[in-house]
Amino acid sequence: MESTRTLKDRIFLLIKGLAMGAANKVPGVSGGVVAFVAGFYEEFIYSLQRINKTALKLLVNGRFKSFYRYINGKFLSLLFLGMIVSYFSVSKILDYFLQNFELYVWSLFFGMIIGSIYYINKDFKDWNYKSILSLAIGISLGIAISFLDPAKENDNLIFVFFCGIISVSGMTLPGFSGSFILIILGNYVLLLVDSVNALYDTFSEVFSGDFSFIHNEIRMRLLKVLGMFTLGSFAGLVTFSHLLSYVLKHYKSITTASIIGFIVGSLGVVWPWKETLYQIQDDGSFLLDSRGEKIVSNYERFLPELQTETYIAIAYIIFGILIVLALEWYGQRTKKIS
Image (cartoon, rainbow, N blue to C red; front, top):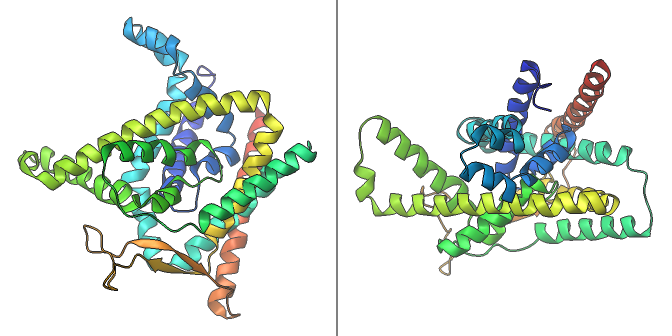
């Protein structure tokens, strides 16, 4: 697996990591869908599964090269490098477009998810009462989650660890948006905005020789929160990967049908025509985050009027579908060449 990976493959894997990282940060979009459509989902799950007792023994005994090969290190390191870079670059660009061209960004994602449903479903032939029931349950859960009201922000470290475990599900379970789950849990701004910004500011200060952040109580709290969230995410990745590798091996049809259902259910979250609702305090004023920005509560969906803006949005939906079809075509072409 490692020896046959060319430089071109590694570059594309890095790009896929960038795409997964960006997708994971957008509420309603799942990084797992990127992995599924781009054709490396099962390798991703099975590579994470190799982080087990055997890998730990190799690491403790100082057999680092064997450990690296055992866990498919080149694959995971390139993928996670792309995700980390995305968090501090691509996701920032995505934030800009979401603020200034929100309708068109959601339309593009909506089209890509429709394309993803087609991609996953086209080769799935094992429809029976079990898989149909799994599909229905997946759709129902996806829709139900999208209409839940969010909780209030909670920086308790045990709860933050739990948030890490749950939020990482978006990477391992296509259609299950970890970032949207964080909105429901009330901690999206705390964990994916404030804490990440605190880490970025800390790195900037350290590189300039400024260590005053050590005496900044708010900064240190946010860094502790981010550390616990990272630990929870790692624990969730390993746990979910072992669980999913088992069910993919023993219940592949039911699992695939459930994934299709989750993705169909997530269309409600990504529906382009929606008005953002914000959290309100008891006195009727907007609840603000540490940057003074209004905190998202949920979305109110509506049907669009037929006007120029709507036609442009529909064009973006079609473009999103074509992107997925192009990825599929490229994947099939690469397989034929190899």
